[in-house]
Amino acid sequence: MAKWIVRACVVVIVLVAPASVLAQPGQRGYAKVSGTEVYYDVRGQGAPLVMLHGGVSPAEMFGAPLTEMAKHFKVIAIHARGHGLSKDTTAPWSVEQDADDVAAVLKHLGISKASVMGYSFGGGIAVQFAIRHPDMLDKLIVVSVAYARKGEYPEMQEAFEKMPAMADAIGGEIAKSPMGAMYPGTDWPTVMRKTGELNKKDFDWSAGIRGIKARTLLIFADADCIRPEHIAEFYKLLGGGQRDAGLDGSLRSPNQLAIIPGTTHYTLMASPSVMQYSTDFLSH
Image (cartoon, rainbow, N blue to C red; front, side, top):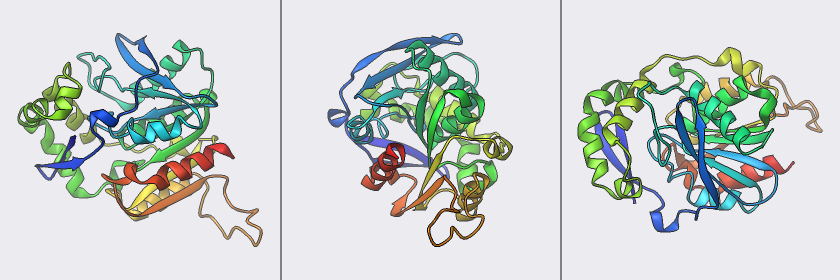
């Protein structure tokens, strides 16, 4: 199928996994959270791992990546409110509310503690979950997201600034696409408007990130939509990159940073390296 990405007021089509190869649902249902219902899908066995998708469509995260991670862990795939199969309210979106929704879903499932892996928009939710619900977090994997708006390239900021005015046109096209058929109950103009409004907001999570105690893996593309100096600063906020690790590596940070060569923000989740690094990190 095609995923629609708005960049500098141009709709770009990027190939992602078609519906036919998306992972088949396991234990699935809805959790009532703060005035709406959030969809979850549980599969696999082992230590619990929450997986959080990127913006607009869950398909990119919940195809091959979910299938691979479910070979090793008990994966809880959560659709953010207003996305995929989850329901919405009239309130604006916020990653803080989405992080609280993740905590509510885990409580609904009787899971007291889990690792969390999030990509892009889902990476922001994962960071906020670590800040707001530290006692429920085991390990953290953050894939391709900025910790402050200043870390994004200006063309990305410009695209989000213009997105609300383009929401009806973009949403109408998505509704007629294979993605629209995958999620027929979705109000796509509203999704695009709320996506733009959410990403127009200024933010800086550096203070909260400094307080994260859980072991953390950061993963980025070598041609990401985030400035490379911002990526380095993110790692430094977590205690990495402060000094030489020593001959035996004993002085290194417990947290890790991976830069995947030959990838962009939009192709990163298709790289097997992301799953390999994530699996190794969670298993040790």
